[in-house]
Image 1 (cartoon, one colour):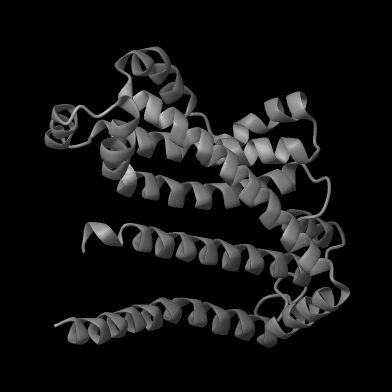
Image 2 (image 1 turned 90 degrees about the horizontal axis):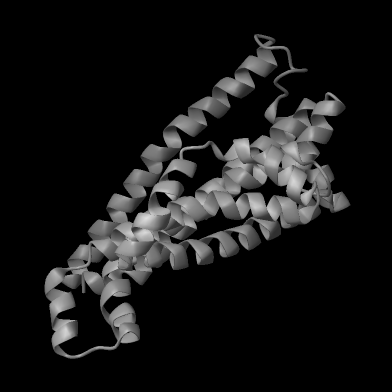
Length: 262
């Protein structure tokens, strides 16, 4: 039975992949046709050949790798800080009714504020240096992790909690053996959302606090020089990296939670 389910799962995955590629390929064809036929001014929508040529030039010079590495480094650092703090705070809110009453209303009110609205405050407090960007990214990752962690911990099975108490688990054992395993699916969802939000925040931080290398800075440089092939290259890279981060997070979450379906 195991041998027949794996090929069918692989076939279904391949089918979903082919279907998912239809729209992007159609958009690329429409893009190239519009630029080549003059339907759209090539100065505003350069052909794919020009973007590929710009990409090769940037790769050979090392600029593209430098910008991409800088963006990924600050993205992953901000994500790690925000996710770690989010899990800790979410566990606190989920386990402690007192903490939920004291801090919950304020947190749920502040999370309604659009993350971009924090940029002026963060800029005043931290300036426009690297630390300000990392703080902004960490803030974007913090919120979804807190929300999902709190929900996961608070919704732990009452039967499992009773078993833990009957076995006289310590507070640490209850956390590690009961609450966190029960909350893992919800935490995994929060981490996946946080990874997406942190990448979007990376782009926003680089665009609005443009100091130092980064894909956002690359796009700004192309805009200032009216070099649309460079701008479109940056946009394509942002989309590809975001897609790969999301796919990687989903795959890791599925592997980490495989024991639940075993």
